[in-house]
Length: 126
Image (cartoon, rainbow, N blue to C red; front, top):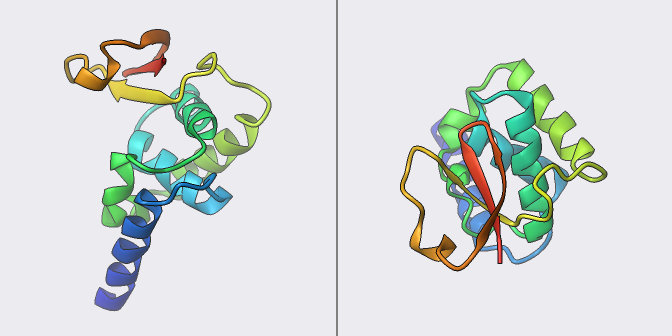
């Protein structure tokens, strides 16, 4: 189990530094990491922003491999469906960045405009 966790953590660190469009399985992990307990619409919005961004760089939710791995089957199913649907349904209106409303507006978002608010997230684009 410890070896599997180490491999997962290394994989996540590698993904966070990636500059390529995420693969389906890595994007699903990112969606779960960011919005595991959120409704489907929030997962769909996160998926759309990740697709618009074209990279998983900076996705904080990927850093918690243990939490991601422990999610129930319905969370994985929702995340897979959200990733697939985001290819044709962008409910963020082109946003490539997001932040939880649990936090104040981040400094990186000051010069961006909000394109959508879904669940506990705000979505931004330059």
